[in-house]
Length: 308
Image 1: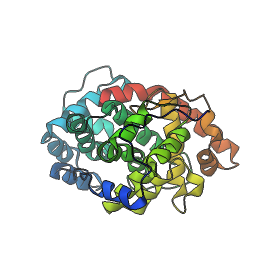
Image 2 (image 1 turned 60 degrees about the vertical axis):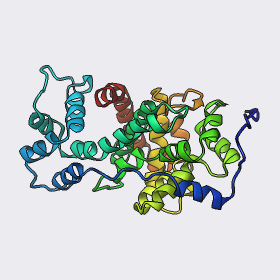
Image 3 (image 1 turned 90 degrees about the vertical axis):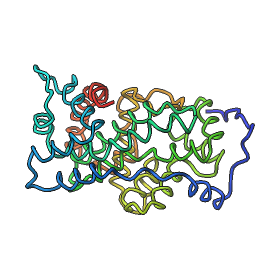
Image 4 (image 1 turned 180 degrees about the horizontal axis):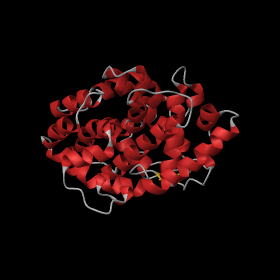
């Protein structure tokens, strides 16, 4: 596509690496998980956890309780009778999904706070919908492969893949506005424009932000290479799954909050490097994955409406 005409007012970039790092390092840290959610995480990881114990912890957090009941009663689950009891909801959802809630709830709340003190063109709720949708599908994609994940890394890499855009709202607000006001064809074009304006794209910014917070390499590498998994020096499967999940969620018209990207055509994700890394030449595995992911996409909007 032709080079866009860019608004240059208040934009002094691209910046040096040292200046980019300085600005990222000045950004407020992500809020640490509240003690109630840390306790929940420890309980949920134990095979001996009792539903009643987990329910008791959830009930201490009104926000988590509200989201849990809203989700369990959403169209996604198709229940004939409404559930109003936390213990019953925990039993229905299972420990894995409860762990997702314990991780996601503080992040949701933090993103909602950004609307107040980080004015930007980003629609924060849309960004969160896209992030949680990508997290859900990243987990499903990896579960369709031979790549075993025994913790919540598969969910977290999808949840945090766009954290660099949050950092940009703090560190590079004018550049973020310029990206938001520029029609772009593909997610790759978004990254190219960010590099043109800033010097780094949101993936590299997000990766550095996570590194500064001492998060595990699986997370920082997956975020860094989620648009370019073929060049990831390690943890390629995580980065590949996020790339495919991101395309699938965009195809479902769950956009990330501000970018003017063209609609994602059906099955275009099968042409990505990420798809090749995940499934290689295994046609049977790829065919089963496509069918499963189509079913997940059909349920995803209702699930997100129940959560948010």
